[in-house]
Amino acid sequence: MSVLLLSAGAAFAAFMLLDFGAAVRLMLVFILISAYIAGETCLNVEQDNVIFFSSYLELLSDTVLRNISLILFMLILSVLAFSKSRISSSVSILALFLIVLYVALDWGVTSNFGVRADFSNISSHTGADSSTVLVFASNFLRNSGASWMALVMLADICIMAFSFRLRENPSFGKYLILLLVLNSIPFLKVYENSYTPGSLRTREDIFDIQRGYLQDADNVYTDAFPLYDWKPDYKIIDGLGRRKNVVILSVESLANSYSMYFSGLRGYTPNVDRLAGENVSFVNYHSSGLTTVPAVYSMMTGKVFFSMKPADLRFEYGEALPKIMRSEGYSTSAIYSAEDFAGLGDVYRNSGFEHLYGPDEAAYEGEKRGVFNSVADGVLLSHAADLIKGFDNQGRPHLTFIMTTTSHNPFTSPETGRKSYEETISYVDREIGKFVRKLVENGFFDRGTLIITGDHIPPGLDLAPGELARYGDDLNRVPLIIIDRDLGKERFNNVFGHDSLKAVIEYLNLSKFKKYEYQLVPFMESDRDRGTTVICPMHLLSTYPAEVMVSGPSGEHGIYNATGDSSEFIGHFLSPEAEKEVAGRVKWFKLEK
Image (spheres, rainbow, N blue to C red):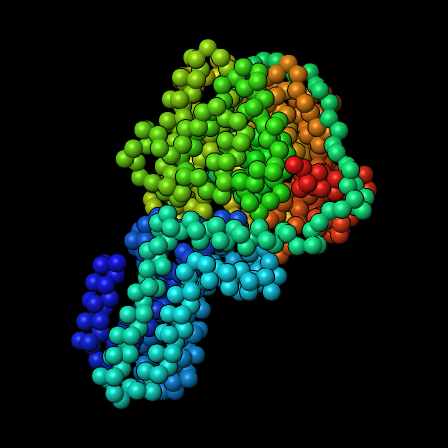
């Protein structure tokens, strides 16, 4: 608080030394830059998570460096606004102020969301219609302390408008500026609080609002639903029983469209591409989630996550991969460095991992931290390789899951500090190459299998030229590579997704396993020439939070609106039998206790 008071005092002293016109121009610039930072931080609601940057000063310096042209643009407009020879009407000045304010706010939102800050996009990112967006905004302001921001911005506008009429009385105008500075203290305090554990309450408040969107009467299943009693068939299948060590490397926001091997569109992942070309690869593999928690849940359980609350314990973990592998004599570990966000830690614990190697590992001491207080992927993967070497020598097979973080939004490269997905994913790709080479040196592949995949596609980025022509809107494709000396080199075109990965691992390593009818194991002769239907809840990326993306076994794709008894397909892109299977699976996933 003392820093804020000193800053406010210094600002007021500077204002008093300036003539009135210059002081008001400086005030305008201050407000506009504050509005931009608000767009960069407090409005960054990314799908079902709220991102709060850990260092305000780091964010501010980055904002200034990345957007110096925007700030210069503000300064030019400020000078023009108070030049009597150009604009003399207070109404015109106020209108110009509001326009520039929106430009600053829109720029901040666009840089994070990748969408414009208009009402329809705000609606789509909060998963709400017009009325519930107002409820969302009301609850956010009331519960988070952000009401100070709204009040201060309103006060700024009023003070500005009043000051314009008193330009002939500089002394009185300067005292109005003092009111602005004093009122800005709680405004700045909100920013300060956003980077402390106290922000957790804000996040929980927002989650409460988001969860309410799925609890209205239109989203209820009753026994009148034609497929209310539907359950998927399953069989107990003979596996290969190889009992190899298994490492799953889940790479944050790794998408097909940035790989030349997987898409032919962009080449930012040469190491991933090389590994895919030299081993077993799957080019039509889909994520079952648009955020990390649903994707990891699907990989661990073979099921799909339907909830606004990622840590919802009503979902079934009894058949989770770590629990199954532990029952077969495996040790199981999860390795990650990010602080728990959106309930991901609960997914690890509920899935039954025996050991969790999290952000407090001694190997991370003194390392620079990034998004979610994680270390750079190079540090994480180096430590993971050392741990895996120890697991290999413990006398029993192991299942190890690794979750990276560096390539998470806002996509900041640890090497350059710039926010660029291309630079960041290129860095991650190089670290994956180093990680695999270290596993080779340690002898892991003598008795081990490495699986590399992406958790989901990166949110809010521009499409590559030709991406829509190639995939249509069936874009939720991520790489899947299996490196195993006994499996050799092969390229599969089967359509399947994260909810089948568990079955693939169990088939390769266990003598018997449970396989649901919707799961696909391309190594099995019966599955080699077929695809399966992949479903992916859209959650907060849609105006309708119950919408589900569906990718059919032959490449067809579309939307299923899962609103309880009122559920319907938006266009009939599947066969009638496949439609029944999708509707039944969604109901089963949503109602399973």
